[in-house]
Image (tube, rainbow, N blue to C red; front, top):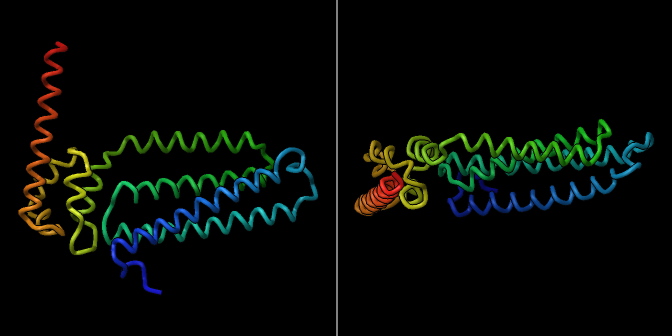
Length: 214
C-alpha cells in the first residue's frame, strides 16, 4: 500500500473522506449501543464489569479509527495545503476525542446520559466560539503559499473560493502566488484582478449604504 504522501490530491481526498465517513458511522453506532446498554439502572449495577470492558474496547477501537483519519488528513494538509473541509475534519476529530473522553467518564464514574449530552453540548459551543476568533481565510492563504510541500498548489481555490480577506496577503505575495500556482500566470493575474474588482464593488456598496444610513 502506497504512503499517503505519494498519492495525488484526488486520491488523498477520497482517502480522507472514506475514513471520515467510516468514523462517523462507527461513532454513531458506538454511541447508540453504549447509551442503550448503560441507560437506566443497568448503568449503576455493581456486577457489570464485562459490559464496561466491552464498552472500553469499543471506545479504544474508535480512538484508533480517529487517529487513522487524523493521519490521513495530516498528510493531505502537509502535501496540498489547507482548505475549509480539511479544517472541518480537524474540528470534527477534536470533538470526537472530547466525545469519546466524556463517554469514558460517563461509564467509569457512572454518570447519567444527561451528563453526556450537557458536556458534549458545551464542547460544541466552546469549539464554535473559539473557531470564530480565527481569521481562517488568511491562515489558509498564508499556509498554502509558504508551507504546503507540493510544488504546485491550487491557487484558484485561494482566488475564487476564499473570501477577499486574503486579498492583501495575495497582493503582498504576488510573486510567490505565481511561482506556486498550478495555473498559468496570466490566468492567476486575471482572477486576481477579478477578485480586486469584486472587493471594490462590495466596499463601494457598503460605503453607499453607510452614507444613506447617516
